[in-house]
Length: 439
Image (cartoon, rainbow, N blue to C red):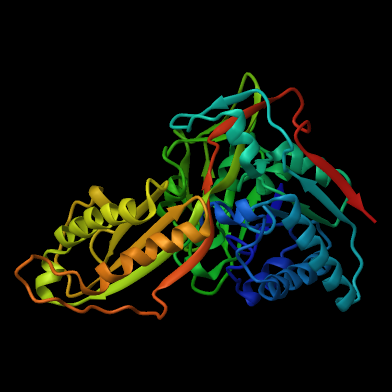
């Protein structure tokens, strides 16, 4: 049997200290936590930075380092620093060394780096954008998502703390059970269920869970007071960040949970058996890349006049046409995009919105993207008087609306976009990764 303690869905979300202490007392074989993902968009990968502050990260990471020392087992983090670039791995290594010195602890650190200088043998996934050599060269960072093989290679160094670059969310949990000979389908299925901590339980914000793997299945145990796993909460997690409720693709194969069966052992624990691991004919890893797609300036107006709120889309359409003409007249054929998003009506789904309503008030967010910051700001400044004073029709009195900030224009700097939705085939799982044990 292999026992994995998962303190939280990601470092930065916090965890229940009492539940963590309870988990440590249950003698886990490994403490595993995710460091981030692409959930917050491409900017973090594009810049190679964490979405969390150093101070906040240090406070949570220090608690896990102390827990590791008490438990006497390895501590593994995947996708260090939100995006898993080499720079965020080094950032967390620096924090780790600082914590160890302050706590009077010693530990061997291993790093697994995922960043790519160049990529070959690309295979597009469904819906992937067209990629040229120019686009690849323009990516500020490209990372490969490590799987269980790379995490196991790091574990075999005997390191106490493993800080990995970009990994799949499941790899850091599945790796040790697979190495120990536990059921392969259960290893991947339990890892998928446990990747976000107590999100698979009735108290999802409590964080800490224990996953026990063996030769036929796995058992999920939430550890916080008042947290309970049920067959429903556990089975539902296959749909989290996954378009297929039965199939999950990972490096080297895919998980099939079609025949999985979920059974409540008591009011807290759930037992799962029946998942199947299907090896692939070739070993591939997914790639993520981000690049600068322009520079942005934003401007926002808030509108409460019922007449304008009821006709806000017509108002925005008229402004967009007039603004585009003024940009051509004043600035020429400058390459740019201007979006007007109606906050409170359809800003999230846009044309896909199925339940239109007329709210009491709306915000109109103008987003200008251009090749450089000065151009973006100049175009946004031409939008300013329209958002402040533009009448809905020629016969109406000139209105005055509200800007929440002064100046109304805010420069966002470089805007990043994801550039890859591809996999790369590897002859050996370690070909795209670099493993180092630090002194």
